[in-house]
Image (tube, rainbow, N blue to C red; front, side):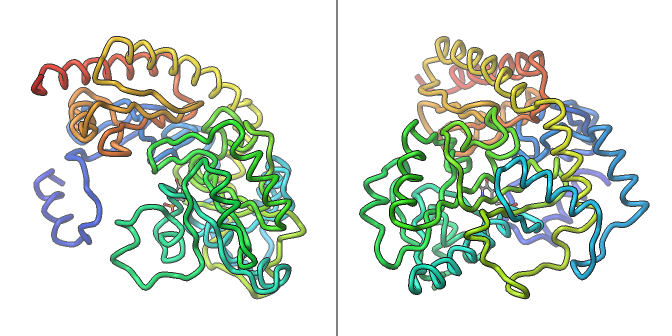
Length: 401
Ligand SMILES: *Cc1c(COP(=O)(O)O)cnc(C)c1O
């Protein structure tokens, strides 16, 4: 199909919610993708941090082919082997007791919210409020947009779900002040991805953990973007020596295939028979994919590799910042980084990068984000930083002084 035809059919039939770049991707391998004109790109978006093992990883492709031939979907009326294998591997890796599989990050967070409501009802005399952070992102369902910090995602859909109390991120006193007899849980990202790669300060999560224990409320962490190796540990909360009571994961678990999950400690795994469910969630194909991805990560100690490669990327980005006054800040950890620019130039930077053969995204008007596959090589990192160097040069020469 020709590009003009594709563009006009998309315009004719799609809800116009996605702002697309003028690129039709047709093939991927590792960190590379190719468009319909045969142009090659380094992919530092990785399907929004989902393509964790790189595009079309041979072991993942093999697992999908094998499982697709055997059994794809049964519903949860029956046992399947892939589901139970993944449940055991994921619970043991996370140090949590119970898991529920779903199809996306938003659904995983929805599950956490349901647990919080149930916890409040059963253990805190009907408490139902969940404390959430400004600039948070938790998905696009009604409950998760309510939980999120972005007014633009919420405002058109009011009235929203009651019971969400918003506080500034990284402010333990604000959480303490917001906690009342109505509070059931605190829901946070350990590092805010969509909010602009905002890092938790070193003592924030330990303080929140201690406060939740003291107040008898649940600490629920949304590790949908940070989980499964992205930050240089299997889960981002491991950097801070805390364990959540409830956790949502998705993106990287599927390596590009849709799967999500929420996990809980036994004492708050309160959803009983018939109280939650899904048709597609936990199907044999998705779980075989999740199992293959997680097993690969653990067998190859991918989080440690991410930590090493992340240090390399960090050094390269700092030297970039030293050479370009346009760069005002570099922040991130592992393989999630933001480059903050001295002005609303991120969209332009993204567009120039695409011309130069690098996919990155404008996570904020003033910041671009780098989230390559976790299997990216140091050479590919160097190439990407080289392209960003050229992008910054072009921005500096094109923008008025
Ligand atoms: C992407 C994301 C979600 C939503 O996941 P979907 O699969 O798009 O529903 C939720 N929370 C965080 C932190 C995310 O980054």
